[in-house]
Image 1 (cartoon, rainbow, N blue to C red):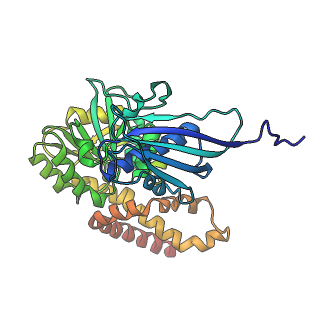
Image 2: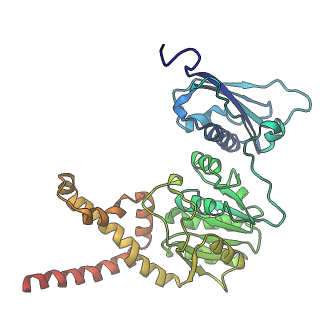
Image 3: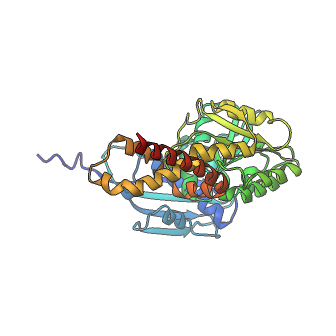
Length: 392
């Protein structure tokens, strides 16, 4: 008897889901649909390549974009899709996207898990798997802007800490969807302004060359007296923007956690990434606000107050120049290493070269003056050391 008998052979199955969209805009339709699709795959442990087809329906009040475009952005380029408009029924819920996925290789007897998110959870409360929890009256609303390695790790690290309601925003809807599905945020906002509305604190965790503009935008959206913290490893470009935010009544604080690794994006985010790590804090005006101190404490990090100039000088020597050196060493000895003529020392010395070049080039460029100064000191020290070798 074949192991693949009719009673045990994998088969095609279907699973449904729904999400209520915040507003009839293209951004909201795509954001909500992305979250729904990612949550469906996550709840059923499905790889995208197992999706056979997708049928979307929308209530008649949603016409800003096709929800199938969200699936295309997730890379479902070969999946047949259909969009349909639902028949209007008096009293029906507004702004709902529904989807029916058919998937292959499902063992007979296996039950797929439907997913109903946000307001759509009221449609089938008996089938809800993970809707965004409502914030308690005492919870601090935290806006997380940027959900890559650092922003995602902040969200994951606070998952077990009481008293925080994490609202995330990322310009990449796919990243945002993965962060929500993994529990890094309690809800997603369609825009930066929506994430910051009513927040007690906003944390901006994006590349250094984007920080100044995002600080300006967040300061305009936050309520007066709210705290604003960034995580950039170079202070030069962002400090003036933080000062302008403080002039608007925002408790602006520069920040930089000495954590992270050469991994990239949300896939590199980890709960506990900041445990025991130093977290540099650079208040623009006055003392560090209580909410910032609470955040750093709940991340398990150690607050270290420092001036911007001292911070950038230190990071040039301990992070930025080492990255550039690792890249140069990899180019210098890469061919020999490929011929197996390198030991563990070469691997250790070049590990930083695997860092995300988008992030690394941004902070090195932003701190170019201090990096150049550190290089002159190192070059002089190496020249003396190498010259002494010939004198021995």
